[in-house]
Image 1 (cartoon, helix red, strand yellow):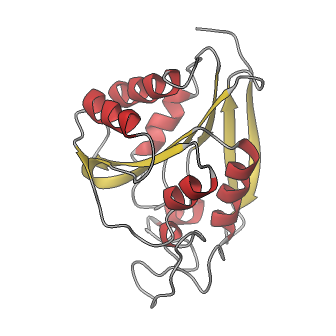
Image 2: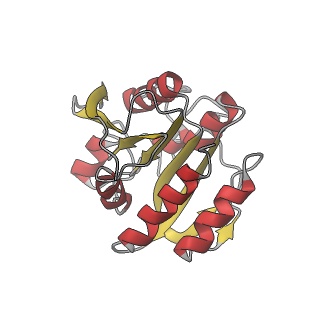
Length: 214
């Protein structure tokens, strides 16, 4: 382990005023930046334990940016959506499309939600080379299009979650991030129901981060 800085920042507030926080772990001058988001759907919380465990890790040349939850109102209510009934993973501006109210309601317009805006501000500020967003309950590593396939394959191998494609949904966080950061890679890990095998996922994130260190 390396001695390194740890700092927690408030990056925004939810629709109901709850803080959305990001913790930087590692030297602020480290060239490799890795964003890990525990959840954006409030009823899919297993990734939060992985984010919490990563707070204890130090990797030379890497700064981790850790967001335990991107949807604190949904976590409090145990709902997929935020307090306004918006599915945040359909609300990001890239390939956003309007839709009816319901499970996957994308909001009244692209990037309308304060939680979406908070994550967007963080990504624009940090410009991470790597982003990992946790969801549930499919039990797969989701193949992201047009980015580093090797990193995704290695994550799948290390965790035992097979690499599979899903439909190209509108307005997703990784779609927007990959569109913004052309030389970066952001992808989704769909954890299984119940607690995740913690150390296996922590090790996979660390291995992915190290692959970007020259």
